[in-house]
Amino acid sequence: MKTPTRISRARGFSLIELMVVIGIIILLSGLLIAALPGIQTKLSRNRVEALIAEIEGGLSRYQLDHGIFPQNPPAGDDRDTSGLEGSAVLYKHLSGDYNEDGKIDYDQNEKVYVPKLDFESQKNAKDPRTELLGGDYRIVDAFGSPLRYLAQPPGIPTADRKTYNPTYDLWSVVDADPENEEEAARYITNWGAN
Image (tube, rainbow, N blue to C red; front, top):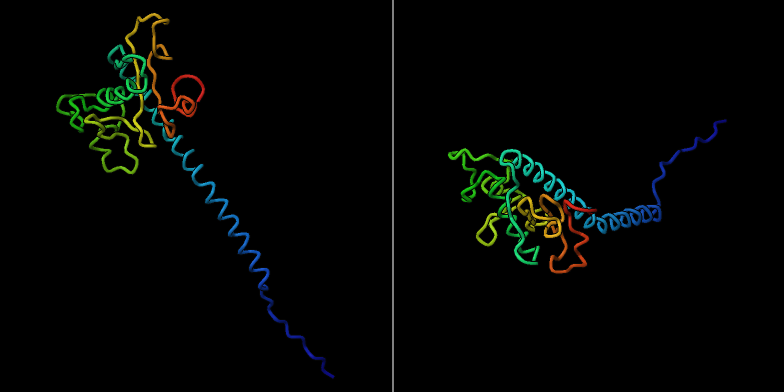
């Protein structure tokens, strides 16, 4: 006598199991989307820190060649306005565009201390390092804000110095409001803890 053979049926997922998996995927997607702005800000801050390190390297090379850093002494008590003017000073001295026409001055043998800092090579970049702001070429950070730079002549007594460092101050206000002193803790600087 033959015994009936069992027909094995392929078993699929039930509707409830599918809904649980879809719910988990939606929950994880929501968490990822909520975290994206923080991740983007951290990546931008890292790019600003890398740019400041690159500028510091260029300033060191400039100082070796000229014996002094490019000068931009603070005017009055407004460090931010003087620092903004310093961004144009940095561009002029580090980009190789000494006549400030947006192009490296190869015909005048100007030395480039920070590559790809000239306006011409950066104007179509996704995150340009330089922009034409207020009639001056300035170095900008990953947030689109100009870097700030102050440098006083050597030999000024410490008590009379308006810079935090004995050489120069270089900073980015990143995503903080430069008019709000409470937000200054978010700046990326070359002095103190960031």
